Length: 81
Image 1 (cartoon, one colour):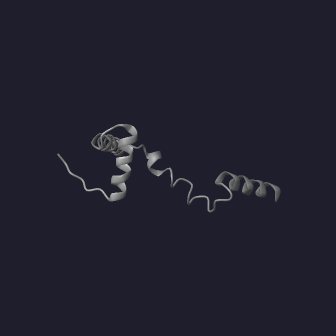
Image 2 (tube, rainbow, N blue to C red; image 1 turned 90 degrees about the horizontal axis):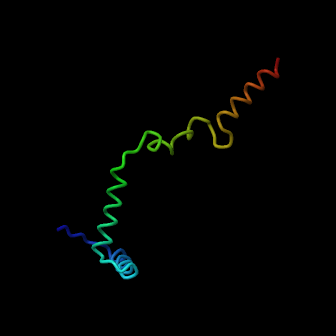
Image 3 (tube, rainbow, N blue to C red; image 1 turned 135 degrees about the vertical axis):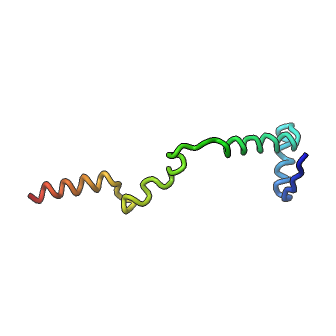
């Protein structure tokens, strides 16, 4: 058996959830912990790990994406001749 001390606000929310779902507080805590452990243990692929960083620093700004800047430079080069 494991004991956990909860702050009063979480205890109150747990109590209300227990009443509304007709489940024991212990069952709700077990389900929540199982869900947490499942998501923590899922392997993430390299895209998932870095998706928030992709494109963040490479384009030099948020207003124009990289492909548009390259196209504009190519057009400018061809029109200057």
